[in-house]
Length: 361
Image (cartoon, rainbow, N blue to C red):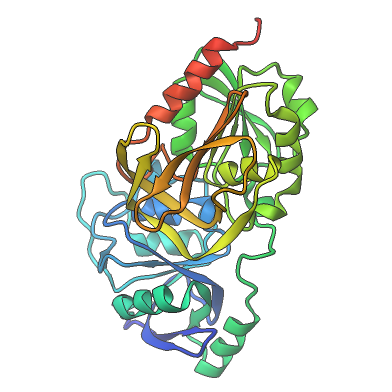
């Protein structure tokens, strides 16, 4: 077995962490460094297109112990810039596994670094905020230069990097749904596919083209980056609100808020994990949710809505519904891939909206 190659992680503020290179070979890999608190589901996290432009730090210390398989990926390939772990398991064990996590990273060209003190790194990000960084086998000065040259995710259009090029169809449900692919996950498509035949369209698709398909409902998916840079989707939303039932998740929720005249902002270090408590303001019911976002909607900024959900950790706005229109959005991931299924009822709520206003056949 070849000895691991020494590697460094250098943040843009000069913090340095020593480790060993894993995954695809890279002298320098740069991106915005964030942390995720899930204890399992690492393959789903790595393959989530919402991580485009970012380097994922796993806070759970042992990653890779049950290997990987084709069925658990959330997209055809990962879009993240890299992976940081404390201890990458060298020998996986699971009856579903078809390969190792290291092999998965190599196959998809994703570099990684192991042996990092992820506890120290996470505490630093919590104190200083998510920030650009670079890691690899290059020297410290080269990595620091790369980290400081990395733009991060603010003011960057990442949706165009992950959206589909051409429309395609998925699912066999009774309804007809058009889903905007802003970085859509396969588990979301599976949940929607139980309700509808889903036509997935590129993020820049005009509202008129969507309405020409005579959908019963329109879905706006999760996705990466700064919501203010997703201009075409925001314009489409403005034309669609009040015309057809709408459901937005994560980035889709943020774009709905912007289309209605609200404001978004970048959070200090975001919500990335599978155990975030959210309270429904109408019922007081608490759901443990899966989340992955660095931007959020500013509470009180969106006219003509009811704020429906709030995060119990920090008071962040987590859901809204549009007054006088069949349209709502949630900041968290009701499909939960990975994570608890407490919030999957939102798909049923979307189906009920479509039942009330189903387009004629």
